[in-house]
Length: 233
Image 1 (tube, one colour):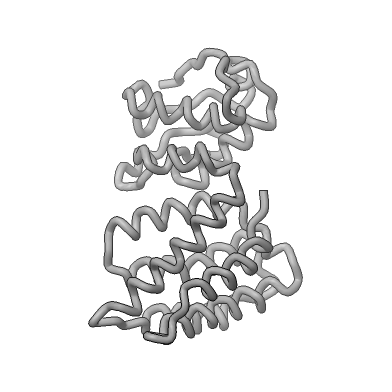
Image 2 (cartoon, rainbow, N blue to C red; image 1 turned 120 degrees about the vertical axis):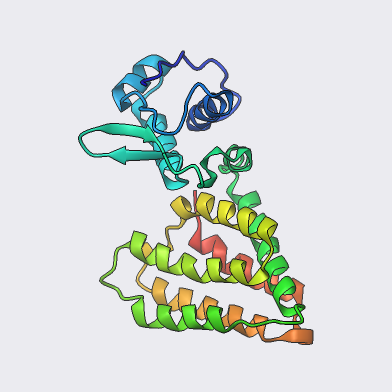
């Protein structure tokens, strides 16, 4: 199935956000289903009455969160992986706010503090898996890797932290936040990014081991300073 879209008239949000919202609405209404083929980039431009840039921005967002798959020589398709969170309205709602970088960073820092607090207060706290991921990162994060590869290795640490909370609500929200942040992570284009990331993760582990000495305010301030330089619009 190749769906035809009508022109975008509501410009209360960015054009790329409007395109993402359009896909979301069609998914929720059932007009688009897993496996359906989308119009080509040029067809979307013509149907929606927009330029190439917002179409590509929307495609990048939808691909990064697993809503669409791009198959070379075949086109763009709605993912067939129904276990993925591509049909979760939460992720689309958050995407609508994803251009507000300051609020995104603010939420992420307080969310990280929530994670730390949940883990250090667990009676059966066991951060060995997180420590193993960190040690793996020390060995694997090398300058010859691409920024995308380094970003994926970076996020392994944060996914391990999510898993240790053993809370499905936290895990799903956390994965959503990281997937939205992922395309905006640009720090691995800088020469000192690997060292900085490893230092940040080491400090994170120290906080997880802090126990009663954990100070949320100090942790938030430290994370904000670090992540403001790691994420930009």
